Length: 101
Image (tube, rainbow, N blue to C red):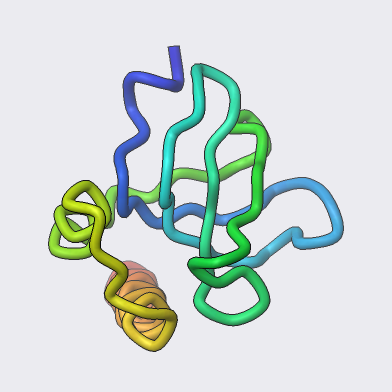
């Protein structure tokens, strides 16, 4: 079951819908089918996107510090979410370059 694999703060990418190719962090796991996602831009902390888990590509990168803050009821802000997503995407590009290079 996919639900067991997904974690708070995990980097995901949309595979379906108008937001296809967009990267998000998992803000909340609603149930075994849906999660709430944030990107710090259009989908900020005050307006998370609900998305079906089967429409997401999961990455092993997890923002543990953000997940801990969210679980404690704190809001680190949209700037921090954007910064983490940018850092994770750069790391993924670097890994892809090393494999091809």
